[in-house]
Length: 185
Image (cartoon, rainbow, N blue to C red; front, side):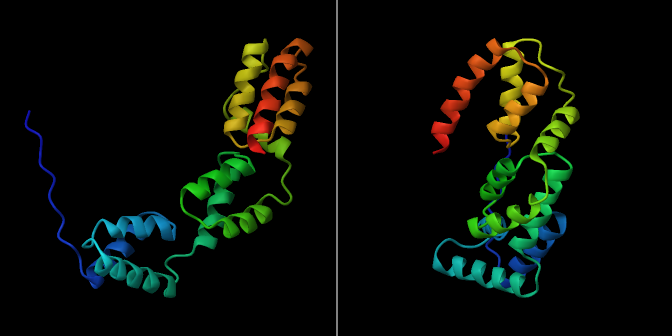
């Protein structure tokens, strides 16, 4: 089987690049950083290409096609309501997408202001169809799942305690919790 050689893209001028950006934004909401990354692939390398990208991004911002604060609000709301993710996970995802830290902080404070994280964690477990752990190994698996979903150790331990995980099960988990707290500081 013969592999296809990739076509080399012809660098776009400002108007063509703007039209490409509008098309890309019409398909999916994106952050300023994501749009810049996509546009850089379509321009000539160097200062001239970077100037074209900046001009197109400025045009998109002036027409309100790009709005990182609005994107962060919508993203946080969807991740909270649909995926039942905790504040930390949403924060990490927004950082990965290139949203500025100040915007993330303000957005998440507002989005998670009146949210009971324990209830959100329970919804996440229910959505994933997780049953009460029967042993220490299953309890550790639930703990790791909730940590990946962005929930703090306090919330996780309260949930496991209400499930009546045995004291010997907590002995192994508490050591893991202390390690994760040391990593965070």
